[in-house]
Image (cartoon, rainbow, N blue to C red; front, side, top):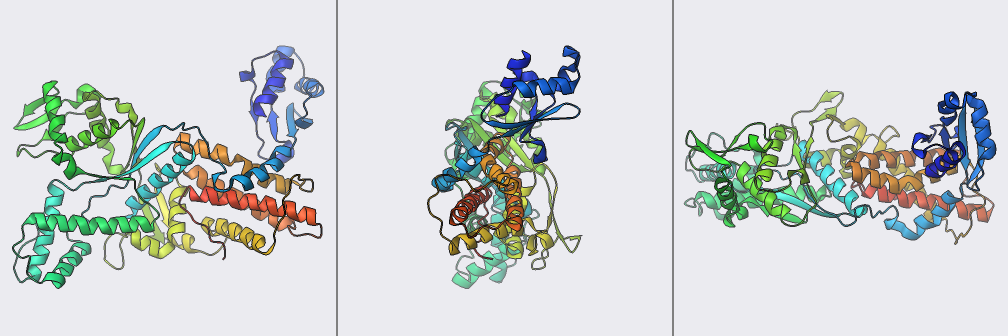
Length: 531
């Protein structure tokens, strides 16, 4: 309609459509669409804006425009036929969980790597925020017609994993009565203590002579189980699990290094091998092989990204913590040096999360005395609240997660407010069956039209969220739709003495229910049918 109105005006005024700005007024009493073109053209035509507006009003004829209103000092407001909103009700009911799907992705392949926490401990709030964002974007992308692979990159090689094995070995040997110190950069978490204790209770001291590889493998297995169980509870799953150790087994880091050396992208200094990152857009040259001949984490990471690009993805998205800012130029310069397009890689940096309770920041877990974990957050507020609250804010902004608000059973809590709208509709539909409605003739008030306009917008919201990579657009949309339904419900009777009117109303609220469920599913929220 915006394009149609602009075209009609351009034909009458004989100007380019691009010069005509059509807006949707915030207040619907000013119409469905509005333009200030009359005020823009007054100097050209040497006429009062109201005259130009009135002239346009008299000349624009279109069956989809039911009313044109001229408002001082020269705004032209358009009121359009609402049949498209009414026709959309049956479309929603017919398409059910597919309502709002789009094909804008055209089957493009996207690899989304997120969380990828080292298997040396449990998941914290930053991991939770990254997990919510990555999973939300995967759901939105798929709904918008993209092909998405959700990847977890397992850092199961290198010095950190060696320290994990040594830490676990020390804990176990101490239980066996053998004194052994935890390494300087070792791990002291309760989860490490528990793994050692469980092993001792199961086999006693039978593994006291086991080498560090045994403890590394045991630690990785147990901690990954814990990580993936927490993520599954958080409604986050993956399509691909990539092992760093397997990359080494395949010789990919070595092949990457050989390629860089062969093409003169490496130099030796102080016994280490340096990559000429600055020649490929990097902020500084970086070490790939240390004096002790150990690889830095950058080399296998470059190899991993090249391997992924070889699988035909049009875009690679990595979701990382804010402390990885310097990593971006390192990895992109490495990809470029390997002869690949580094612009295909997009790195999202998530900002800090502060947990707030009773107006104070909660830094430590009461249970462990350390950072609050994802599992504890779910215990405190539930999965729905955790997923929605993380979805509410853009990833690049610092976030205060208010526990009191997330658990409040009132309209102040957006999750409760949306869930109540959904449960209310479910309750009405459960007690009242509607029959097929082919034509809607009784729905004719602004409250209903506002709800139906929002339902109609859903597909464009999905497309915007996909194109802009902003899941919070969907979270905001769900709240706005629930709010408009609450307003409609407070002013209008759904079940009336008129059976035709009742059936139309039931279908209308059913379309709201379906749309709400689809929107919430895109951000990992499952609304309750009863409250």
